[in-house]
Image (cartoon, rainbow, N blue to C red; front, side, top):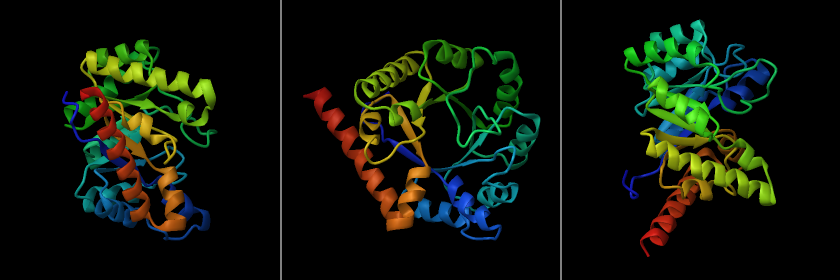
Length: 253
């Protein structure tokens, strides 16, 4: 893996739909936000179709599939309903995530080691449909080994605990992600990362050379309220690019 590989940014547009659904009307349109994000430099669009349809709808997935020119990454629970939707619309990628109806947002990574037998047919069927499968997991050796055994090409490391922590605890979580990213590369997994990243927390993650893509949503949509989506994405891309350049300069110096 080249240390000069370009770090990609996937923009999650779920919470445009959250705002729309608060009024039960047709705006703001998450598909419009996705197209704006694409124009602003997003390398891909992520959308999580939850079982309770609290934000993104089936219609949104259909429209995104038809209108995007960048890859669509469908976040989904490992359920038969979501599998059939993925097979119907054939997104570029599908990221399997843990899901609980009572949670406000995805809380922690998927337990691949314990759920191996359950996950196997989902990974197989998605892969057979030429959908690139990833698993949203903690930066843990046991989970990474299980993901590799399942045969997925990609893992996305959960950065939420790192983003929420302070002081030495934050350093501990960052070290865990750093080691997880290194180990991912060693066992042949493409490594992505996401959840909770913002302007203040993104740089140490973006500096990790094994990480190929960051997925960021809630923060960017929140910033868009105050300064526009294009500006928020462009600033995030600038921070990512600078962090990666600084890391490359340090490693070669």
